[in-house]
Image (cartoon, rainbow, N blue to C red):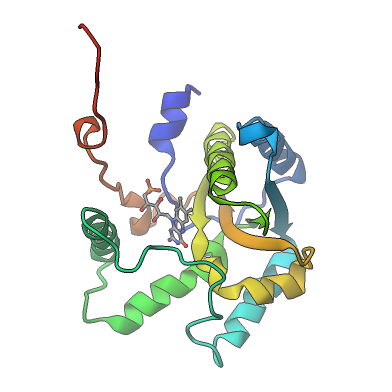
Amino acid sequence: MKVSEALDSRISCRAFLPDTVPAKTIREILSGAARAPSGGNLQPWQVFAVAGEALDAIKQDVAATMADLPRGEPWEYQVYPNPLKEPYAARRFKCGEDLYDLIGVTRENKAGRRDQFRRNFELFGAPVGLFVYLDRSMGAPQWADAGMFLQSIMLLAREHGLHSCAQEAWGQWHSLLTRHLEPPKDWMFFCAIALGKMDETAPINRLRTDRAEVEEFTQMFGFSD
Ligand SMILES: Cc1cc2nc3c(=O)[nH]c(=O)nc-3n(C[C@H](O)[C@H](O)[C@H](O)COP(=O)(O)O)c2cc1C
């Protein structure tokens, strides 16, 4: 598979088949993704790869805890700036609306939107969850490094016939994850990745999000052609 094919076919998959993924495949993906560059070659990422009963236990714990904490725990980091400026706010709004349109959940249907958001905590049915942490001492440059690592995982997943969904939403269950995964105290949860085979029949997986044109985010100087 060409890099461009992996890039084009990677989408955020929000409905997976239950088919398991062998540990060997997960190791291959992680070992390949570890070739991602990082400033000073710090390789600041830490991963918990979780499947089977261990993953079920996490999902069940979230489902049970949600009764008392419907909005989850207080976040350890702020996902979006508040307020979110334009054009970013409009982009965020549109991708949300496009997703809910696709599955027929109207703006007024708050329960439907909540239910869809809660599917995050079932990893959208994925058989594997990768839970990515960074040492708390790391700053913005290292978080960017971790982003490159995440994208590398998601592209290599395509090469293995798998799909993925990055999930910051799990940040609202960081203490619950700590109870299950027992990371060292100086690690901070960043993001999960749901990993598995896509359910090709699920309407939600038909979402193709927009991208700005190159001219909207690039200034070019000094080219003669
Ligand atoms: C770091 C990161 C965290 C994300 N967190 C979530 C999430 O919690 N739940 C979700 O459904 N999608 C999540 N997404 C998916 C984005 O909404 C998605 O990447 C974006 O809308 C572009 O769509 P695409 O991935 O299908 O190209 C996340 C993506 C990234 C990169």
